[in-house]
Amino acid sequence: MIPTGNLSRELKDISDKIIAGARITDEDALLLFEKGSPGFVGSLANLLRERKHGDITYFNRNFHIEPTNVCVFSCNFCSYSRLYAHRDEGWELSLDQMMNIVKSYDGKPVTEVHIVGGVHPKMNLEFFAELLKKIKAHRPELHIKGFTAVELDYMFRKAKMSMEDGMKYLKEAGLDSLPGGGAEVFDTEIRQQICADKVDADGWLHIHETAHRLGMHSNATLLYGHIEKYHHRIDHMRRLRELQDKTGGFNTFIPLKFRNKDNDMSNVPEVSVAEDMKMYAVSRIYLDNFPHIKAYWPMLGRQNAQLTLSFGVNDIDGTIDDTTKIYSMAGSEEQNPSMSTAELVTLIKQAKRKPVERGTLYNVIRDYSEIDTKEIETNPLLN
Picture 1: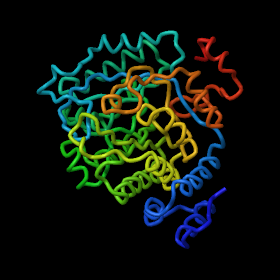
Picture 2: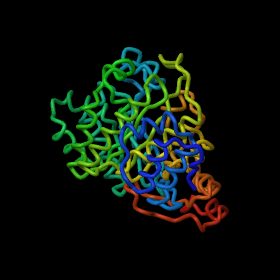
Picture 3: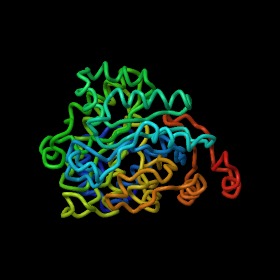
C-alpha cells in the first residue's frame, strides 16, 4: 500500500510512474530524496523489490581475506589503512598466512572468499596471481571475488599492463568476479576532497566494463552520508545505470554508510537511520536495471540491516565470520562481525522474509524458509 495522502502533484506523478514500471529521471530521484518521506519512498521501493524477488532475501556463506591494511593512498574517510611509510602499524599477510585462512575453512560449506585490502607496493600483480592459483589448486569450486578497482588499477600500472591484459591475466589465474569497492563518489570535486590520489571515476568504470566484457560479473558501491549532496549520489548512480544498460554485468548495488571514527573526516557527523533507509529505497527505485540491492550488515548493524528489508533491499550479504576489519575500525555497529547461518536465517525470518542461501552469482543453494532453527544449529552442513 503506497501512502498517497497529502502528496504534492510532483510526488504523485513520480509514484504513478514507478507503479507503472517506468524509469525515473534524475529530477525525479532528487525530489524523492528532498521531499519524499521515508515511509513513502520505502513503500515504492518495497513494491519494486517484491515485484523482482517476492519475499526472498538472499545471503551467502563467505569469508574475507584482508591481505594488508598498508596502503600507498591516503583517503580522508578511511579508518582502516596505514600509509606505507608507517607500515609497522599495520599488517601484511604472506601467501602462506592467507592460504592458512583458506585451509581453516576446509570441510565447511562456504562458497566464496572475498579478498580486498590496502594497496601495498610489494603485493604486486604476480603476488596476487600466485595467491589465486594456490586457492584454486586447493579448493577449485570456491568462488574468488577479489580486488577493488583501486587495487587493480595500481597493480596493472605497476606491471605496465593494460586493463584488458591485466584482467585477462587475473581471470586466467582464478579470479571469478569483482567487488564494488573503491567507487566512493564519482563526482570529481568530491573525489578531490576525500580520495584525491587514487583511480578516478572513469578508471573505476573502465575496469568494471572490462571485467564485464570478459564475462565476469561485479558489484557496485556508493559511499554516502559525508560531504556529498543528493545530486552527487544521483550522478553516481546514473553512471552506474548507464554502464549496466551497456553490459548487464553488475549483480548488486551496495550503499555504504560513511563512518567517522578515527579518520580525517571525524568532524563530519554521520547521517540518521531514516536517511540510511531513504538511500536504500531511492537506490532500488533508480537502479531499475540492477537485479539486487544489498545491505552490508557489519556496516549498518544487524537491526538496521533487518530494517532495510522493507526499503528495497533483497540481500543481506553473508556469514562473513570474524575476519573483516574495514568497518569495525571505522566505528560501525558491529565490532566483531560474525553471524552463524542460523542467526542470519532468524534475522531474515523476523522481518517476515524468506531466507535463501545463494552463490556469488545468485544461483540458489538452499531455501531455509521451512527449516527449523534448531535443525540448522545442530547440522554442520546447514550452519
